[in-house]
Length: 282
Image (cartoon, rainbow, N blue to C red; front, side):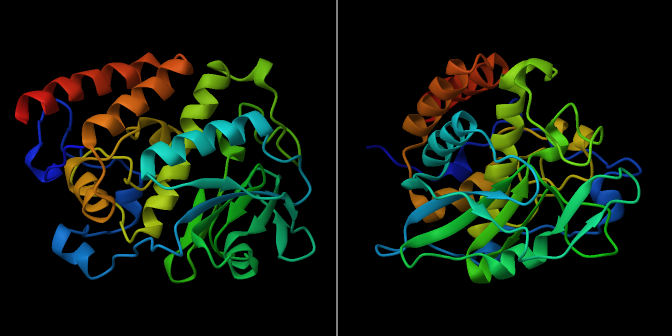
């Protein structure tokens, strides 16, 4: 297996510098200075030999659970992206465990994401636990909603797929109906993989990226989340590489195979271009 410092592979064809945020977008509302590599070194959370399993836990409140086929795809991609063994845990109903409310703007049912994290159970062999739900989330009463929330000190996170569904807001609880999804199941899987990897990225100590258009950019709404790339920029990729020491070519090849199996050729094309550049730099 060949390894090399990812920070040397920084082509501006593949990675675009972060554009100035428009009104309503994440950085226009949240003044973040970013996290350089040296700052990351003081916040690293590493998997260990006895703490290396990445758990995906389907959570339910009032709604149906995330479908099993979607969970399988997420599990497959998480294993490729992070290079860790992944286990899908048993479904857990947390309706009676956490505060909830009806959102005054969308009139849909929501639960308190911070309270969910407080109630999450983390097995002794877990690097982290990611709760996945079709229920909408809010992080604190003053916020409208949040796509996901992570607690690195407790090694757990939760994220919602509710706002990625076409029928969000039409009923009290969001229902996954693949035949009604704009872009079909493939678009939903793209969105689900992106938010999952973003939230688990926080578990490593990687903060929001402000340097490039990157998977680790913050997002305030669906349009901004969709605009976010599916991949890490050079700065954030180097952080993950420093911890996991993966083979970059092997990782990109497996990613391309995954995206191709779901018909997501935009991701495949990006990866193929990157593989050409990486191979020429070695």
